[in-house]
Image (cartoon, rainbow, N blue to C red; front, side):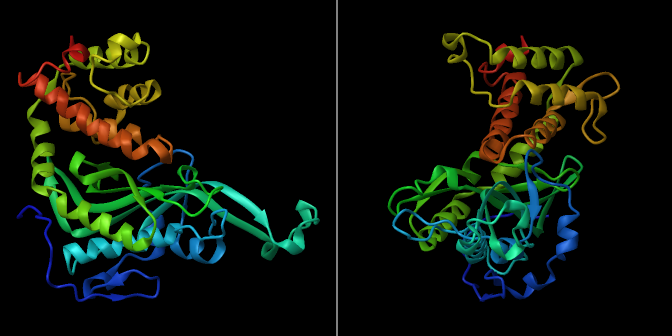
Length: 342
């Protein structure tokens, strides 16, 4: 299959759907809500899966101190998907899988003095401080080291990063385009496919920033870099050394840590990687104890699923950088990651 090339398309024959996301003819075959809900979650820690309908119908939208409305979670998702469609053209984009956390509860003015146990549903208000979402582009698939992957887009929004107590000001979003491993729903994110902080004042600005991200993403390079990982293998001894050094990393004196590459995965996450090295159905060790770096990469992205929404994408990207740094070290192209293997 020809690798995906992200480019501007002249065929933007798309129209809005009922939920606000522009639909091309191929968009109409999206999975049902039930099918989406039954997928393995792309993030696990402290999150609940919800639908766009729930966010639209059951949740209020926060405002700034001057009563200017903030960009809602649903506006974020719809704006981003429409921007992706504008760049990629007539491709199928699945309904977003949404995970939320940190529910903020309130009540309507007529219920201010009603005991909590007596509140009726229409007197309760809620919104979620944080949301993470992913949509797949199933037509853009690639087999990487025996695993089927699909192009995907997604993002994170946390109102905790906005100054809602002040006047209307910039809001911050995280956005990515990359791949999802269909076997395990692990996300695969590269440096040029991720923006850690998009600052905007309006949905128009947000759409423009997302279009820039998608246009600048080099899918061929990302795919080739991931395919390369299977060429390098760690012995059982090297893997044990790596786990031990990774656990020591966070306890290093500051001066020593500054001389090493950044490692964001936690001690508990490396414990999970060590456990899955033996037990993971898809990515465990070989019979001789060795493990190739593609499998190790997926153990790392699987462990990153236990991160909270705020740090999830950053740790996923860091896993990509970390394992590729190990590949360069094993191949003799760099000694930056020698400390972890020696």
